[in-house]
Length: 449
Image (cartoon, rainbow, N blue to C red; front, side, top):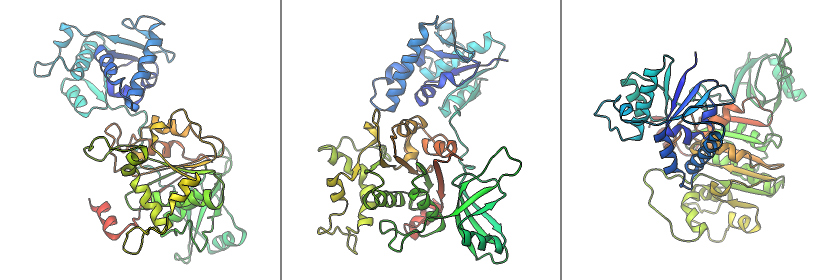
């Protein structure tokens, strides 16, 4: 049986292609949604872009038929725009403001339910709207096309118990074949069955032919970290060793690092980027960016040129660079005789900028780090990834538990979405870091609060 989906404005602002995601079912957009799109379309951010894109899609579809009567979509469903009248809004209780757009959406859904014997479902990312719909006897759901189960998102680290002969064979020949279905670029800890303290860290290079009756995964050792470290940074735990291995492997073009505050995500990414750009010269530039989204109430416009405006937003990046270059003395104060990253900025090897101006660009042969990627929508992350030119590596870091963007959550943000979608892709790797290394206080705060 066909279903009728009544879409709220926030669904279209979250995903401008949402009207094409409901297969062969019918979609209704209340006129109040069109009015809200018109109000949002002037905004310069991603919300405004989505509103303008939806308007262009609707303008194209209206040329194929009548929006009030319904236009046939390629999926087999229909799209229609419903105008609410006095009789329509009378279907909702008087205590609900009948002039509010959210309540007009409910009124249109109630009227559709009365006229049609098929299921009518309200789709909204607004929790309160879904609650009101349930009270009125309407079925309401969140827009979950791009959601992942944050509790089950794969950490990409496995522990496998093997015999002493197998682990010795791994060290001797430099690889090991396991008849265990593993993901490509998955991190593996081999544990000696007779001596559990005897372990080996490895990475899955290939997982064979999935159509074959027996799947054999080929695992290889991690890249050896030099005594001097990676840009003077040494991994402090197993997860950081796995993360550095992904960051230093040139064939892996996309790396996602998820972890709570203080696990070293950004520091490791910057250290690896500097190594590849300044020392190995694999990439022409280290480009670091992060979304401009404030935690809490914004303090307003910042004075100065673009560099001065960006300084408060990019200060966490500068802090990590100061740590790498040792541009602070033992008391944490700046050492004026060591310039550190300023020289790389002047030489063009390092660039720090916001994501605001990335649309339309092509970024070739660069090591791109996007920090705080949990504040991006899946559409925004797609925009970033499609900017990658030949020979570019992209690293996304973030903590899904620290989201400041009101339009995404832990299950629908771009970081977790990409990590799950690129699972088992040869050119992508993912690691979830759990152990905090910033300080004992930082780790306990991240765990207890």
